[in-house]
Image 1 (cartoon, rainbow, N blue to C red):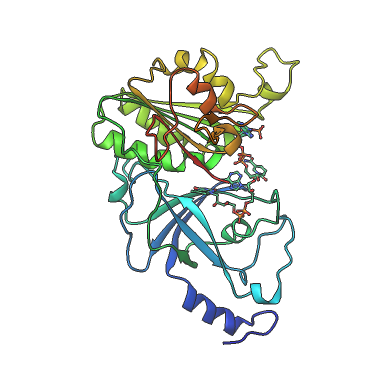
Image 2 (image 1 turned 180 degrees about the horizontal axis):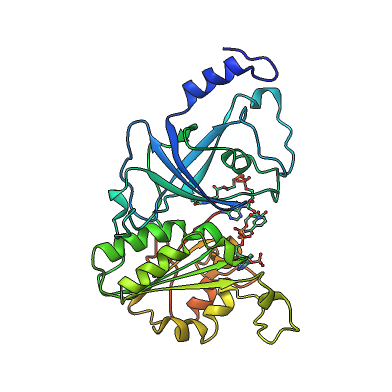
Length: 319
Ligand SMILES: Cc1cc2nc3c(=O)[nH]c(=O)nc-3n(C[C@H](O)[C@H](O)[C@H](O)COP(=O)(O)OP(=O)(O)OC[C@H]3O[C@@H](n4cnc5c(N)ncnc54)[C@H](O)[C@@H]3O)c2cc1C
Ligand SMILES: NC(=O)c1ccc[n+]([C@@H]2O[C@H](COP(=O)([O-])OP(=O)(O)OC[C@H]3O[C@@H](n4cnc5c(N)ncnc54)[C@H](OP(=O)(O)O)[C@@H]3O)[C@@H](O)[C@H]2O)c1
């Protein structure tokens, strides 16, 4: 099929029918730039391991929400479906507030931030995902992928999961899995966001803390008045995860010691927060600058988990 420069409504219907395989069943707006999207594939939900991700896609013919960096598409790009990776998040509790395993939900849940401005090119997918409403169609990948999972964790290990922004998505699926299967070690989640209104799962985390003695949720902010205004009595500065793990604060707030013998750390989100090292020609780990959490924890005896060298710091970079 060939299309005119701008696809007509009829053409768009055809493109949607031939390219999409899933439906939005619910959309929760946390704020203007943060949503929880619940999606049901036509053939039902496929199984995934907590921590894994799939892809979502929408055609370039779909409208972008206003207020985003403009994009200029070539003629041959207009019929293309743009796909990006998204971690499986999880509601964690059902409508009665009862804890559920991730595989007990009849939909996929995704946690998405609107990127208005790209670093290298205009953002393509999120300005279109933010136009979706319940009943709308989209593409969802048929398979779950990724090695950012709880595979190496033993039942008595302590688990620390730290994220920036939507990087908490895979941790939510892991928390639901661990708590619902009676994990015996401590489970600590730490989330760093710009503002408190970016804490989309706050209420559920607090509910889970009340119900599970081995679960603790810690939230840090970077753009609230107490983070920015040094004339205030309660000024604390920006609460970056790197500083948090490099001080006594994490151990004070979580109540656990960062012991590499019995602790697995999971890091997800902003690559600069993670600071993933590379091996040089001699096989020596080289850390990037500025210093990320992996380097800080490595100084305390932790090791990044690599295919060739299993370790106790696991990470997933979002870009
Ligand atoms: C394995 C994996 C899992 C991911 N899971 C999620 C998820 O669960 N939720 C989610 O919102 N995104 C997730 N992402 C990022 C996602 O794939 C897209 O890149 C993002 O939604 C932006 O898409 P875009 O096309 O609008 O802009 P893009 O062109 O893809 O990105 C433009 C820029 O936006 C910034 N950016 C991208 N993603 C984020 C983010 N999540 N938070 C802050 N800034 C960001 C970066 O600076 C990036 O260079 C994941 C990425 C990977 C690799
Ligand atoms: N969340 C919002 O309220 C908001 C508002 C407008 C636009 N957006 C758009 O949404 C996108 C993502 O925003 P986001 O806030 O979810 O994700 P983000 O930019 O990755 O920020 C999440 C948290 O990580 C912190 N952070 C940033 N760089 C870091 C680093 N090098 N090391 C450690 N921590 C770091 C941020 O602090 P900082 O305060 O220093 O950034 C923030 O607290 C952006 O592209 C933006 O355009 C979001």
